Length: 480
Ligand code: BGP
Image (cartoon, rainbow, N blue to C red; front, side, top):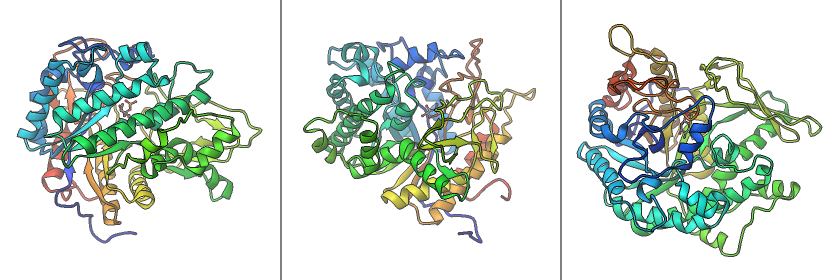
């Protein structure tokens, strides 16, 4: 529907931004923290990404929260580092790790900012990986339960919004890239066993949150890439639905309905895959009723039919930041992805598609009728400080304005959306491009090549966003 007026945001809508511990904190060896698998994964990547300092939020958190308050934030989504809280297998939490998060949460609350806390954003302690074979073994489930219960008990008096696992679907779909897969050759089958263990951990977190946090709410965070059919050819529509199932819907159906859907059961049968579901697993899962969906959305995809006789092709992300290097995958008999001639792309070939957000919110609301919060969305660019000492990022302002407007339209369409938290507050490490792909509203003065003074410089987008927040989504800066 087209409206004759700008959309209205609800009175208590939460405006903020987002981050993840391993990408923002730094201080990887300080105050007892031990190594996370993602620290090692980021080191073996090309181009090289070292998270030992990142944005050094660990030492700048008060300054960072003061800037959030200046921007008018009413929420901040961040994650806890598991190896900061449980650095070893003693079963005893690290007091200094807990202190850091207690101080951060206190600082947020003092400034009227609602903490929205992710329990797992890729930083499994290496000791868990070594002792239990990471996500491949069942030993992790009890350790994860211990970890999340500690978090709920320690922070639950101030944190009411919890996020269980960040982008479980992406960890499975891109297991190699995100360091989850241990063997590329067998990942096709292994991934569903690993996924089932992640599902059990998700269930543990949901159950424990409801048990331990008074008025606590918890939801998962799928990484969402809306998929359009390439044409009105009915086969392309089915291909788009297949892509939707195998990248998103299998997970979202599972979280919402607490059982595996018919599509994935048929896929397993067809491919002779055993996800290793054991007695008692589904009983546990059935008790884990989520309260909302956190949604990460940056871009959209286009799918078309792919004949069963075609040759498989792996997706290749553009890692160089030079346009034209993204390779679209082919899955014979299911779907293939292709480019979208109707949208622009950024330097990493990510589609810039604001309507994707409205589509996603409409789709998730229609399917699950659960409240939704945007936990990630944002523009990665090559930012730099100009000669006037400021950071001018008109592309990010245009991106945020167009995307947030579509969130407003989805609300106008009847969707229940409670928060918008773009990626990211300060610049932080990109998953594969270190500091050279920047997302922040606040510039961090450092580069991958040289450690600089880490000065915080609010970008033009910071001031634009502050005005939008102050008007609760009415002051768009210029007519759209
Ligand atoms: C999401 C992750 C974030 C973040 C973001 C941007 O999938 O949850 O951790 O990194 O993507 O991606 P990138 O850093 O690859 O540009």
